[in-house]
Length: 480
Image (cartoon, rainbow, N blue to C red; front, side):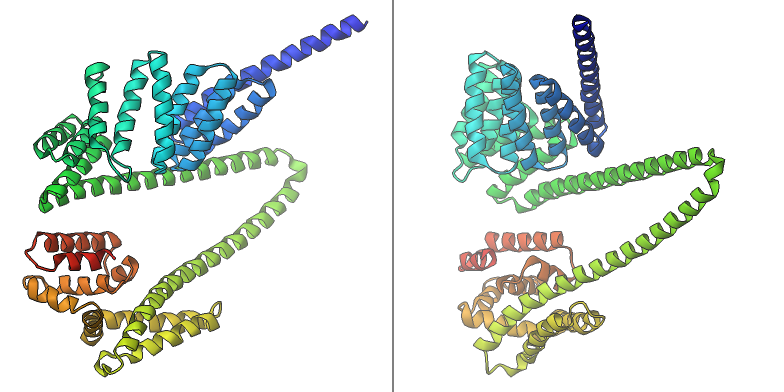
């Protein structure tokens, strides 16, 4: 009898284990399919189920594959710190499963993840280890990949080593006989530029651009071209390359947004379909039809009430966000203009009285926060001060006098040494030199931050390319 029970127990155990094994393989396959379809939320859910099954079966190899997929999902969602943690767990799992080949490739991905978060010291440590291990097992492809990544890293550190980057990529092409990618050629071009070999730099930059096979590679090549031409002083050409990079970045962001909207819409439709199926099944129970109808009405009312509350909360949050935005600008203006008022007590024509308005403004914000009066009382005064900076020449003149008095007549020297500068460039210089943040300047000029960045960049280019005697002073105060 005991023997029969033991046999039955072992059979049940085997059947259960076999079923869990099948479920684990299906979960691994489904997670990879969902990841390829960019359904990251669903893929992460399936990975969590696979992780639990792998722990239950003590399958370290499958656990490593699960963690690697979770790392890839985190990378696609730009959660690089999560990606690093999952890659560490995947490497440990593969090591426990005695799969050094898989562990080696995961470590390579871990080095690239450290590079993405600008932890160059950790990335370099990982690349050295992977390169040594890849050489030991004679893995040429991994050696080439590691050398390419290492070469890019040497140009990003605080003290770039272009000669080392050139040597590494030469080993890839000559010793390992691996073709250089468009990205490798861009790195090589920038390394030559840092070494002062401008002809070689331009040649390899053009090769990188010509060999790019995707919009991403083309954007990388354009960025390298921008770096090189900027170093050469070809400002207009460098700006065109930078604009191409920015156009690609904007298109990627728009595509990502469209994918998020499509994913959200699919989730909503799936939920609606699930609710509809549930209601169809419920209607078959005729005895409970009335009760279920009443419950549906109640739930609908609760949902509508909750929806209205969420809408109201959303509107309130938007109002608070707008208020905080203007308050940050107001505090910035208050600090700058109040400093001006202290240093120029006799300059009454500069409308210093507006500084007291800003002082009362901050007091009103804290008094009326959370009340219906906040929006009218605070935003009205903030906008009036910002409008003054836009239209009132006295306020701009006050900032100019403050800079001249405290910075060795910096604006006066700028006008004398660069007489061809437009009024809008002088105005932008005064705002930037006064220490206003990009948010404040973009609000005053009613321009996007990207436009403000570009205008400041072009202003710096005009100053750099000029023959002004004090151009270093002008650039220094803009970069402060």
